[in-house]
Length: 153
Image (cartoon, rainbow, N blue to C red; front, side):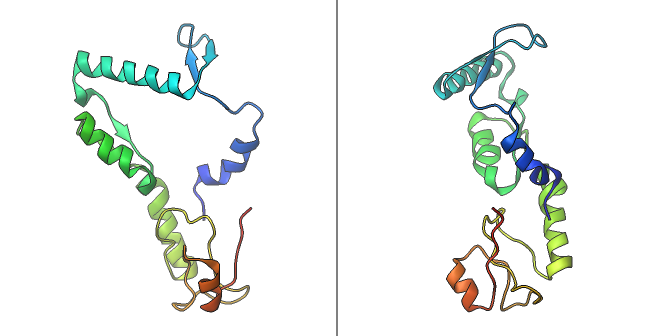
């Protein structure tokens, strides 16, 4: 079970118009004028703008939004280091929690962790059981537990 963003990932990956490098706006907002820059230039530009906002209006004017457990460093640590109390992970109610409930209802077990890339699931036709649960562990140990190997390539 994937959220809408997860389902659309292949179209993002192969879209001929997807961004392949950082861009900085050179024209007015809405003009569509940008220049391609290096990651170092983009990060320096972002830091400069962020610092100016913090100095002019205070650190609490910045809100930080993360996406589930993969962004804990950003939503938790960066927000604390910056000094803003305005940090949240709203995707939990939009993506993670529904995914966990759907997996529990469908397979009898939650996915757990953060989007395992290679899910060792039940062998074809066999229901999930406590001895064969979704796992991020290595395939050999999953197979030893009676699981099959599934690849989502």
